[in-house]
Each structure stands twice: as C-alpha cells, then as structure tokens.
Image 1 (cartoon, rainbow, N blue to C red):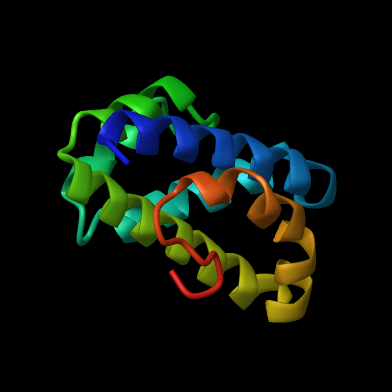
Image 2 (cartoon, rainbow, N blue to C red; image 1 turned 135 degrees about the vertical axis):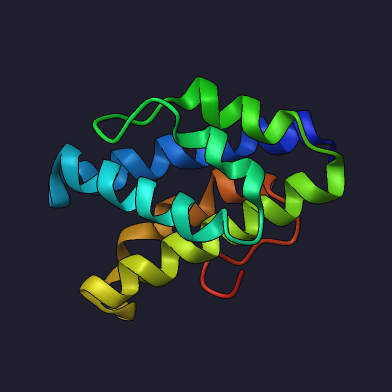
Length: 123
C-alpha cells in the first residue's frame, strides 16, 4: 500500500473514530484525544506535527491526509501504526481496555482493514 492509500485509510479511520466517540466523549473530547495522540506519536515521527496545524479546537483532515501522503510508503505505514497505537493506548488509559475495544469494534471492522498490518489494539 502506498503513502497516498495510507493517507486515505487513516483519514477514513479517523472519521470512523470520530463518529464512534463523539456522542460519548463529545467533540472537544475527540479533538483533545486526537491532538494528544499526534503529539505523542510525533516523538518518533516528527512529520506528524503537520497533522495538527489546524489548532487545538478542530481536526484538520486535510492536514492529516497531507502529512501521511508526503511520506514514503514505509514511513507512512509506520506513522499510521504509531498514531493508531497511541490513540488506542490513550483512550484505554482513560476508559479501560474492554470499553475501548467495544467502542472501536466497528472502526476495526471497516476502515482499519485498509491500513497495512494494523491491529488497533496491538499496533
């Protein structure tokens, strides 16, 4: 899978996550989880800093897409894994593993299949 495909998959995955969690943690909570996950993942993938240029009040999916599409294939896949793993771990630390798994089950069944070698709970 190329970087452009990873970019599209990560955007689709994020949109599914947003849909699954907004009614539970609210839009601000989802945005806060996104930005924290990007901040942590950018420690090993500094280019992810571009994924949250829109500020802390929104998720700019265009910036997210561009950040991934601008990488080589392997780095885009590695960054996707780091971001998703970080997000999963952060959410699980807040609400527990079983509830995290239950809430994200629909996300895992759809758009995460497009991200190479990703198991959301073990990325």
